[in-house]
Image (tube, rainbow, N blue to C red; front, side, top):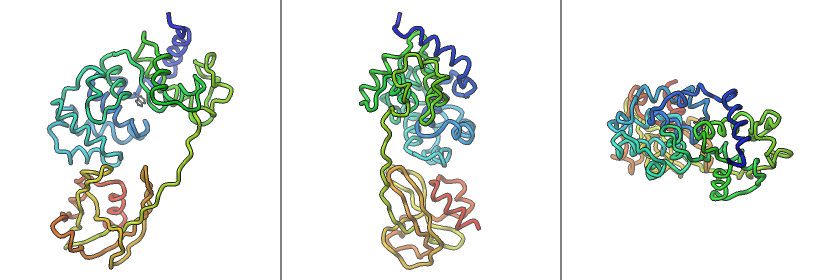
Length: 319
Ligand code: ADE
């Protein structure tokens, strides 16, 4: 019997009563649907995934085989607006590499691009019943508080996850820990009175001290000119190559000032920098000749554009 058996039973009862059982990825055994949810949820909140992205993506690509047979551009298009587009590129590579059939163990899943240890375990647990703990942001916060730790290495966090794990009910335990972090053990003003783990939680007197709050670094500012170069009723776009937006289409950008008509400015926050963009209507610079493709406003609706580029289309081309 585990030292935590009583606690596991309390957590389980709490989950049965309060857990988010209606989430669509908890009502399926299809590994692809579970995998897709875990990838979308890596950097995006449940409400956003649920309201705007999960079902339309499945409508467009009902199986992983459909993803494998599509172009990268079509997958990026279905991901448009979700951000962190490497997730979509990795999904496409994984679909192709596996021929649409995901491997059945966490160990094999972890070898695929875009699937880290926690995601591999979540898929293996939720789709195949493998008994391994996971470690997403919500679970980490619960563990930091439960074991009263202000800082911990990844290795220490995995050790804590193993210690508290309920191997008798892996599926319910892992889902319950995520729900506890999302609904009860929240970053601000956690509801300790409602928590099924409170009797053994070492951090319960001052939960907000654990983990140590991150200092928000001021993001470096990048200034760029974003070029609207027209030809007839079309506009020039380049296909991006950077890690962040690779494969997406977008307006050409320049660091240096160029002659042209200033249409406005936009500020956009990325994870690692803030972009201050001047939107400039200009001639196509000579070095871009042959490196761009021209799209009509109708065609712009059918290609993958980043959030910022989509806003520029709406603000400066559709009005
Ligand atoms: N975040 C990551 N995986 C999740 C899941 N299965 N349910 C709710 N939130 C999640």
